[in-house]
Length: 431
Image (cartoon, rainbow, N blue to C red; front, side):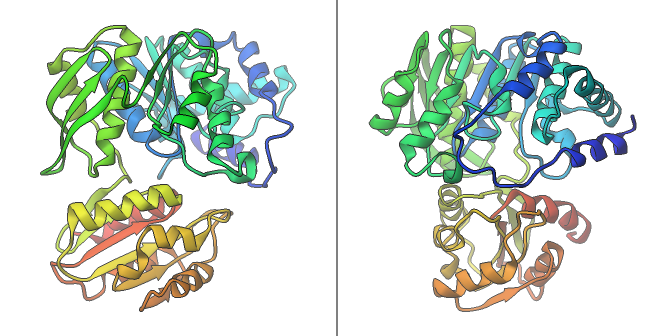
């Protein structure tokens, strides 16, 4: 199988249908696939991560912390920005096209042997487990795709189960309250797990504590961000963890929330080893963390920012970082597109779209993309003064960059699909 064949196989197994609430869930297909492969999901101890926001950053931080301790680390995340290879990494390096094709070919063969037809995400998940086993990783950092209990990744038995935070998301599957969402996410906690709880709502925390587990660490009680200051290119933080205190740590990511992700990640890494980490290890690990598409600066004069905020909670954080950390002096331009199932008015209100001088609405390049005209109607509804519609993300970027001065700023957000399309285009057109 060639790489193009592997992509075609995945496309043929993709489904964008709304399947409704999770009232008849099953892990049968992924369990069967793993069974015929010899259960590669158990080839190494796992840090399993769920949460409404911050999963990606937290996963990368944990990966770097484990790597800096000398481990060979397999990391599985989703979704991808530009290429599916981004989802499967070992020691921070994406799987090659050849290796990816080899793993997907194996899954295609096993589909016949196992007698099940996996979906896109299940096939990628099985391929990741198989690759990690083939390459004999020492640890796996696995990010949940959807909620937790019935996510395909939940065939692992987590040594450390991590919950970053809880917001209202995927309510078509698990709503209508945060408690319902938390209950689904709590499914990644296993009887032998150490649980790291980044959420601080007592009612929600109790949902996680009620699951059988070995040890539980909770934000506020066992770990916390003690200091969090803006620094050039990121944050300077002081973190308290169950095993110690770490001062003057530089986190090279934008936004106050990244300190919250950092303390969760550090607590998870400590939990994995059952001991504190040397401060030099932590400093070196955090220095290597990169998060494409998460408040990524891709242009200067004008400032051009990409952020994959795709729900109101993430959009609220996005707006806070844009207006507080960057505080552009010139005109502010918002390029935004989102998916069906998101409430565009809530998204735009959280983004503070009415505080931008120009709002450019586009359709996210996905079968689930909400038409740009509907996003624009929501923008006008909340009082945005100048709203235009662009046919594509690329045209939206061109319109945003027209007649910009060095003091202006462009923020591109609303969906990882929008960011994923804008990123390669801007690399070509920006100096």
